[in-house]
Length: 226
Image 1 (cartoon, rainbow, N blue to C red):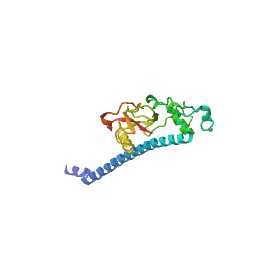
Image 2: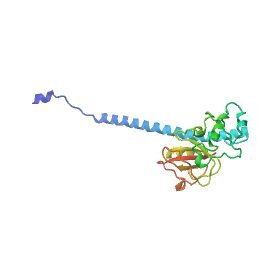
Image 3: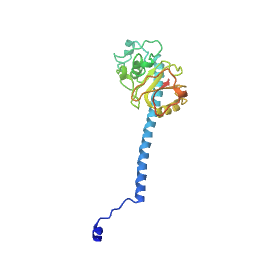
Image 4: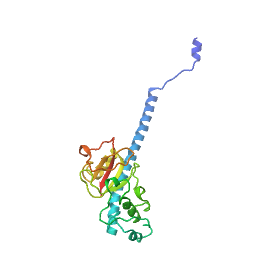
């Protein structure tokens, strides 16, 4: 019997040192993944801030060059006469001094919403194809939502033309508001509306609850007064 036990292969487990090394490696891997996710999220926030500021700058540059607001500019023949990039299918606005885009138009390209983007592209102030119309005219933001505009009053009566991003995660909405405004989604130039995941939620004229406090578990449509 003893001889039979001697012939059996000895079974060895992991030592404490080996287990510690494995745990350290797992910790480094998890930490690297989390840090990578944070870097990606930060880059998305920076991109939306850049998009908001860039859209505002493009609008002002257009107004300075042509004396009219993009989207409201017209008529079609006058626009087409500016050059081939405008195209015969370029839509004209009603030239009333207002870029008409109701709250419900923000993310569907209706009224002068799509004209706004198309005219900025045709003039070279934004990249993209000016022939894209309707919903196709709206840029896509880093979270897969859309960029749109509205001139309607929203949350606590913020007027004027606003550029909005949909499907913004709560943590990103907090970062955007802190970088561009006062950190509250109910005051200042940045206003927010609680959204539905994977949907382009229409902004509302109701102020964000809890004095504009964001919740990281929510998604938002975030708008910036240009």
